[in-house]
Length: 317
Image (tube, rainbow, N blue to C red; front, top):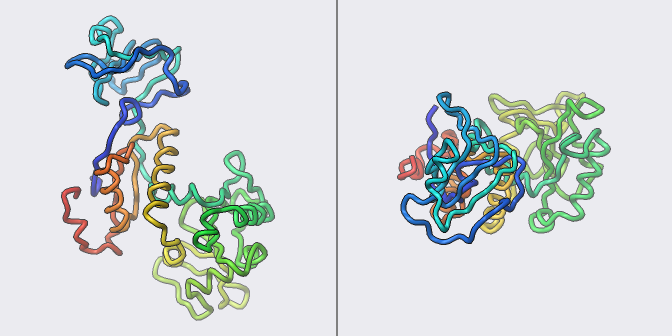
């Protein structure tokens, strides 16, 4: 499947094309950076395991970059011919350099929200092993989170019922034990399930009479009518988007910056945003034009909600 849009971006010499795994933030040896002449490398990497992803020459002794692009790769003696007075020389010290990873499926914007939500992952990635610990994480987050202070909603992300001691989703009663005054939203690790407390249910307009949309389930209590707070698939997405706060442009920019840092720290230089809204596509484009994207973002607009919006007929399509 071809991406709906490939957004413009600004690349640093390393992060946009390559990942050095396990390297220190500072190069081992450098020279003072000055404007490079034509054909002269900005940076040359040697002394490590350089993987090319080229079956004909799967590894190399050295690699040279200029203006964020590969200038030369191969034998050290050949690559060093691109060295000039301004070239930075980086000794990998036996570490590995590989091309940046291409993300096959994720939600760039959702990762941004994750950076300001409570961490409900189970060990080793988070602290939550049971529902009591989930509740305590939400209490602690509620007391300290700038998002809660600014928007009056409590967000937690990435719980996994299969890893909780109870082997079930938290219900509205579990979340009401954290707060009945503020809406609480907890998102399953898959993104396709989630749970709300009673306040959030009321804000989303969900009652015993509510009918689940096609492709979705509203779980009910023993009476078969009262929502227990847990939603699946399209029913979950329908309530979730009603409760996401109206973030300011500054908050969105901060979230996208934090999202980029997470992807790059894990080696990804091309990332996906599935189910993008028209507003998100416009935001990504604006960030790219402003030179604030350090990764390539491939956005897949949600055609059900975006429809035939003008953004789908722009130069990025």
